[in-house]
Length: 198
Ligand code: 99T
Image 1: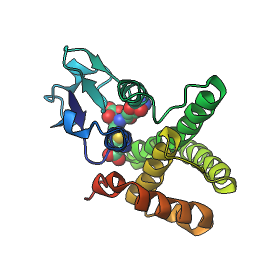
Image 2: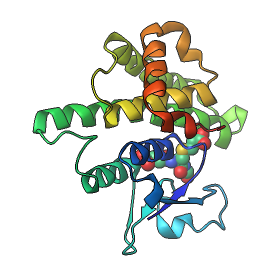
Image 3: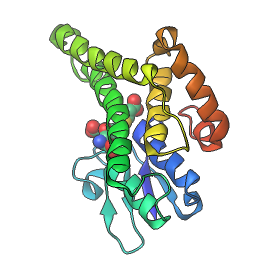
Image 4: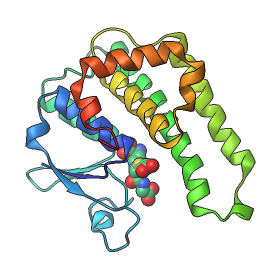
């Protein structure tokens, strides 16, 4: 399998950590991708022009990170996403909340990257930053427990992204999550190995 990736993408990191935990990392070749370069083949592989995109051995390409993680989990026998419907929905909701932190954070970043200063909307940025704050408060109130699952991996990657692009400002108000992330990193070596600046 071939994974179109960028080392700074937290969605890619989620896939790579999931693959490592599932014992599938050595079946996945990494293809460096520059989504901002119009000559990069990514748009021919994923029309949305985003990473991650995983091309399977039969030539099928799948995206986005949630679909890829679900596929990898399925071929590994279902260790990161529970089969029981309610437990499954809970794990997928945890992933959606963590991914929502990423989506809202990246929208803030793109606002600064793609808009000239006079065209930026502080209201829009505040709206996104409120989403991040609310999601972090939910996780802080009840940090995930139990075996490593997809929701935990997604949360760790979201916090890692806030460290990488937002100077770790989240740490000040979330001591429970700081402790949780430290414990997660100690349990899952692939987390440190896939850090954006590793
Ligand atoms: O939007 C673009 O044109 C390019 N962006 C991406 O490819 C980002 C990279 S994170 N990927 C996604 O937005 C994927 C989201 C999707 N729902 C998924 O896979 O789950 C780059 C962040 C950074 O470098 O700061």
